[in-house]
Length: 184
Image (cartoon, rainbow, N blue to C red; front, side, top):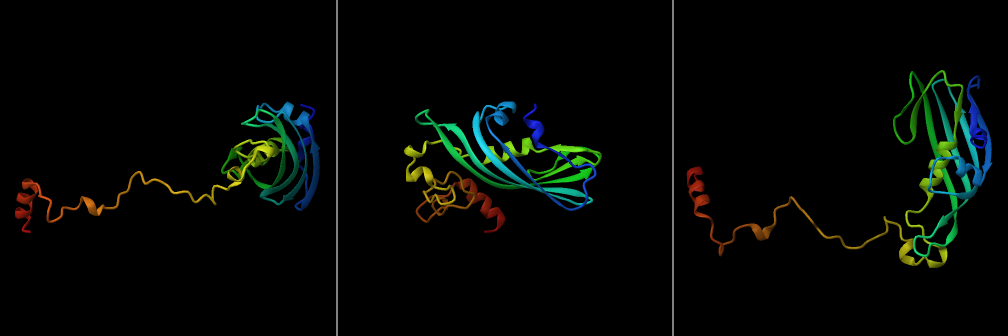
């Protein structure tokens, strides 16, 4: 827990202004966290803390690299990290996570530990497919937004013209009787 204590920020008694913190870590950071995603890596983070009477805004800029295992070849490789994220901590009566970016913390909190936020931001910046750079193709580099492949329509609530009875299709006599009652 000694490694994670580096990420403690004392907020008790801070004036309402902006503060800068620089943090750097390596393998010890990932070893102390209870996770199986990343074992090795190194990174530097610049944290800008803006405190006001009702909230704390934290802006994280992280650069570095982590060692991942390729999904295809099972060879280790270094994946660069460049993350720019923020989180807002509002003061309240209890601790609660409202959204991915906004949390409520108890107004009597003296210290916050940003290690969990840092790890989450690093993990979210990793690619879903872990492919060694020498094995990457143009297909692996495509963004999902740029993907213009044709999709197959599974269901549609719109009326299909082919289902409408035509002149050559015979209408069920039960429906004919109902139409007569309706006056058509």
